[in-house]
Image (cartoon, rainbow, N blue to C red; front, side, top):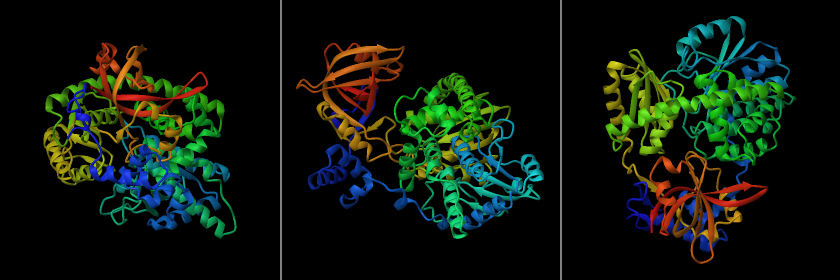
Length: 579
C-alpha cells in the first residue's frame, strides 16, 4: 500500500513507508524511552534494540574498534613496516588514484614523516596505466626502494608484484580477493577469501589505520611510542564516506571521531580543500561525500593522478592552497565532461529500459574518469546496479555502482573468471571492468542474470522509501541534533527521509537558475522553510512554483541552514505529491 496514498508523485514515484514490524518497534521504543518518535524510527530501521539504543547514539571508538590482529597477515605487515622504519629503509607507497587511495597514502606518509622518514608516493595514471600496480612501475620502484606498500590496490596484482624483485611488498587493501594471493610479505585485506568477512565493510584507509594501530602496539611492547593516530582520523573519515563504505560497526565511530578532528582544522590539505569548497559550517558526511571527495578525486579522473594524495599528505599551507585551487578547477572541468556523458548514458539506458536487474550504457570516447560518477547517477535514477562503459576502439573501460544488498564486485569478478571481461574487480558497492566490444552484450546479459539472483530489480525503480511523517512544528534544531546522534548517515545507513503531509506553500522563489526556495505552513501555526535543488530539471519545480494555492505532501530530509550567523531547520525536498 502506498504511503499517504501516493502511488504516483509529481515526479512519478510511489511512496513506501516503514513495514509494520519497524513501526511497532519504533512505537515500543518511544513508549519505553524518552527519545523522540523521529529518532526511534531511525533506530528501529537500523534494527537497534531498546537496551542498546543509548550506546548506539554515543558510539565509542575504543569499544567499536576491532583488534587489528583479527585480520590475517596484520602482525607480519606491521613488523615489516616497523623494520623499515627502524633500519631507515627506503619506502614507497603505491596508491590508487581515488579518495580512498589518496587518504591511505597520506596516512602512511604523514605517519612516516613524524618518524623522520620521507616516503616516495606513486599513483598510476588512470588512462595510461589503469588501476593498480603494473609491471614497469613496480619494477622501477623495486630498483630504488626496500619496501613497497600498496594501498587500496594490489590484492589481484600477482604479476606486477612478482616484478618487484629486490624489494619487499605489503598490500593493504579491501577489494575482493581471488582464490590465490600475490607472493609478497603480507596481504592485509578483510575481503580475502580466507577471511570471515566480519570487517569487509572497511575501506582501505580503515585497513591502513588498523595496521598503524597494530604498529603502535608493537612499538609500545618494545618500549617506544609512535605518532598520534587519533589526529589522523580526519583522513579515515573522508575515505570512508567518499568510498561509499557502509557506515556500520567501527566505521560509525571512525567517521564521527574523524569529523571532530576535521573541525579542528589542523591539517593544511583539508583546510585548503574546505576553504576552496566554501564550507562555512562544521563538516558532516554531506561535505565529505559531495564537496571534498569529488575535488580530491578530480586529479585522478581528468588531471594529474597524484594531486589528491599530495594535497592530503602535505604539511605546507602554501602548497596545500595551490593544490586545492588546481583540484577545484579540475573538478569544474570534470562536471562539464560528466554532464555530457550523463545525458547520453541516461538516454541510452532509458531506451533500453530501467526495470531490469541492471541498468547500463556504453559509448564511444566517454571519458574513463567520469564513467563511475555517471554510473552512480544511473543507479540513483533506476534504484538498480548500474554500469557505464567508455570505448576507445574495441576496448571499453567501465565502472559500476551497486545498491544495498547487492554485491556488484563479486559478480564482476565472476564475469572476469568466465572470460567475458578482460579484467574486473572491486567491492560490494563499486567495481571496475575492462571489456572487448564483441563481448559487451553477452557480458551485460550475464551480469544481469547474476545480479537478479541476488535480488536486484525487485524493488520498483520509482519507489521512494520514507521513515515516517513529521509536522513542521516538530522540526526543531534540538530534534535534528538528536537525529544526528543516530548517524553519521551515508552508505548502508541512509539519512532519515520524512513525509510532511498536507502543507500549504506560503511563497516560492527561484534561487539561481534551477533551485527553488519555499516556505511551507500546516495551517495550524507551524511552518518550515524548504529548498528544492535542481527544481527545474524535472516536473517538480514548475508545479510547485505555480502552485495556485493547492496543498501538497512533501518528502525529504531535514538539514541545518546557516545564514547570517543564524541557524534554522530546513527541508531538503526530494519529492512532492498533491494532497
